Amino acid sequence: MSRSDRAIGIVLGIVIGIFALIAFVFFGSSGSIDAPSIDHNQVERTATDTTGDPPP
Image (cartoon, rainbow, N blue to C red; front, side):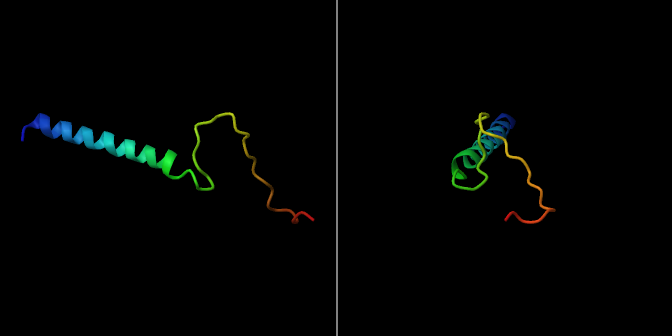
């Protein structure tokens, strides 16, 4: 095995791993509560005050 074959294998493995991770995050976790999104038109959530009394 030559050095170039080894380098190509390492780079290809890293690229495939990154692609698999991105595919899982954006396509595999779409059913979760905090699913990631690249849509920037969503309303931003604000933190609620948890130190006061509960709402009536």
